[in-house]
Image (cartoon, rainbow, N blue to C red; front, side):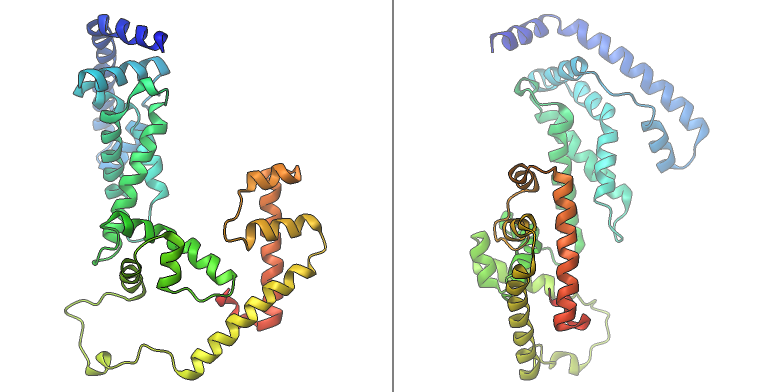
Length: 315
């Protein structure tokens, strides 16, 4: 701690010289790359990508100095420099959030907002690299953008709404594997949220939006959204058969290692990580992942033989 304090004191004494040296190099590189690529490219996207490919990474010392300037002295130029030299990270994460309905430049813009926020809030004295810290802000901004723009009626305006939205796939998977039909009351108990809030999010996600210009028919307003008694009984029978098949499949597994993976990871309500399973079985994480995929394939083939290919989507 004393060493870190002495570094900060020394940094404050040499602040003008450090600032001049860093920003002289920054401005020179900025001007050179801008002049070269404005002559070569006219497309904005190609110009941005080709220019970013030539931006070097900051060293740990340069990054720390810029972080001290931004955090302790509120230096806006230092924050801009951090953003400039790490913009490649923002674009890389933005590509992971690309969807069919999204414009990639909108994702880049949101990722840039995230890295700008990180440049102002990052404290180098905590011992974390800027890229690690900024990735959380970038992902947060991109997730918020996708939630707010996926539908006209927003589902993630509140913290509880975002929690429900991101936890629903895992909860549906756990309940389906155990042979239980997901409901708002069960989901609310799983994630400790209000039943009304869960019901609202489920209603929005399960129904499609309709344009005001869409041709309206009276028959559309009187359709019975409830299942018929025959369909309801059929679904209950299929769910019961799936539950029994899951129970019986365990006894067909001959290898003790596969049984352990099935019990502790695939059908467990609180599965342990693949790393922990690998440590317990003294096998690598990659090998455990291969065994999990093999078990899933065997189980699906077993279910298709039991209930038929038509109803394999219920799993």
